[in-house]
Image 1 (cartoon, rainbow, N blue to C red):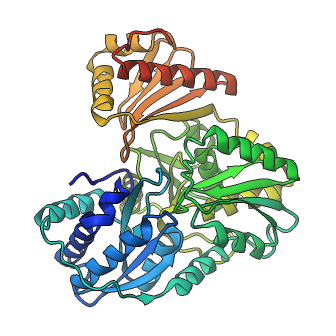
Image 2: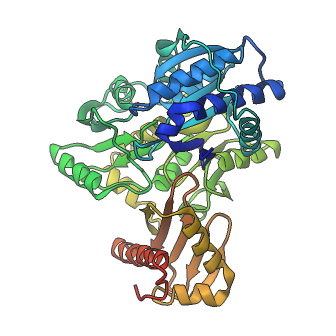
Image 3: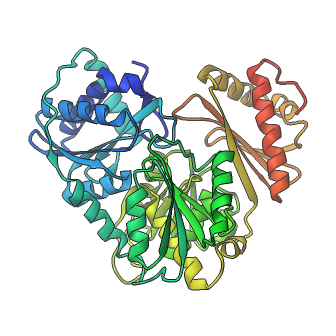
Length: 477
């Protein structure tokens, strides 16, 4: 079955997930819950979905599979992934979220949640093994489920209403790029709750794949055009709202790892868990311990759990895409905000906006004060998995291979192999090559001293990757 777990959840072609694959994997999840003693027949399993065209059909399959396994499906409808996860933890239920997050509409996915949060890598292995055993067991029940959409959304909004002081964003004029994000209405509701004037922008009836780690030139152009409307900020999210997008008053994007750093400081975090791809300047700026991991929320969650096991407090995690996770509760406004160990866009968006409002600075002024190395990233789509594997094998094969590959960019003085290959150069710059964990894509991340240098370096890195796919890896960038 050409369906597999990626950095966060199950991913594959939508047409395949609309078929038996979603039934088999949902049944496999149910069997995993029973086998581990986390749930038993008759218990509730929540279902949510994003706004992709294929999501309703896949969600119906999930409901049928849950019923066929003897569990009680409860339909939470269209809602953000963090809202579903929050309600699952609040009610003590497992959950299934139908979403492909930021990937194109012809693909989709499923995220699975235990009673205490997102599944870990060992859960993925067990679910995959069960899926193999159930390959021919495609029988399913009726797609009937109790409706809990309103309850789930209210529970999540109540959590967010405890984050900031009353009227915290009064006086701010904030644009919300709605596109096809399932957060598009809830985000406006919570911003208005805190007193902001909200301008709705770019609502779409078709799915728009927004990757907050590699924002398209078209999206950047829209943000800069909208910034001319006298906005203090423009905010948005990816398809299932587990990654924030924040632009300043001029339409310039804030990097996700900077958003994460700012949010960690707002919460008063003492331990930050973040992947190797997050900005290398984080250790120098923050007043907290930093733990680096591989890319993907399951790895960040594992790092947070290790910190908790070591009796550490104030534990949070974030990724370079801006997705923010909390392993402990916080009370920045005097009211407890419970832990939510899954990626969320709402908490970082509200935190950053409040920090700007409280400081009296523009968002650009607040961001520039951090003086992080300038980072940039992009990807090459349609990059076959075997090609990315061959490229990584070549670069890891010998020091000579790596040095020759990067000869036109800089001299190699160090490297890290936590996830992909992160290379440190003698000019103080960094370049990182990493295959995507859930799509046929090859990603390139760079850090340099200014925007122009970062853009130039990124172009060279992408051209080197493209040349290698053509068998021309010795071509000059």
